[in-house]
Image (cartoon, helix red, strand yellow):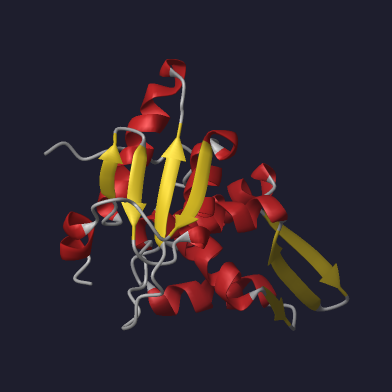
Amino acid sequence: MKKYKYYFHKPRGEIAKDILTLLAVSGALVLSGSFAASAFWRIILQKHKKHEKKKFCDTFTRLQRKGLVVVERHGHDLKIALTPEGRRAAGYMQIDKLKINHPKKWDGFWRLILFDIANLRTPQRNAFRGMLKELEFVPFQKSVWVHAFDCTAEIELLSDFFGIQEEVRLILTKDTGNDSFFRKHFHI
């Protein structure tokens, strides 16, 4: 089975992933003292000892130039935070770990994902369809997929990631006709 490639906007470097993830989790880092930059490097180094200091500095500078990270100095304090674009890039890194929670009790609603993506955007359509498969959606038709559990946030993240917000719709319904296949698939 062919693995879909959906890394259109995602930062590729392991160091960039670590920096963006750390800043996304912590919100912003405020480091005090004249050795604030080396303290930030030590925080990253504690997690991954494989990063060299020069590569880390080069990556951090590149993230600053791209406008993903902002550094503000207040006296001896150094505040490092993500810009809105940086938060979006950090959110895109969550695509790999995306998972839909399966609560113990089903709410009785089926989630229908409908999309109509033009042929000019075939790579986005195929990648979006591949992600739906990975998230255990069941095809109803080629461009209509079904899931039993709440997936609103996941679909919003995916449609934003692929740039297809206008072409994707999420519909909640109680009736899909003969739903025995869907019930069996989702163990309901």
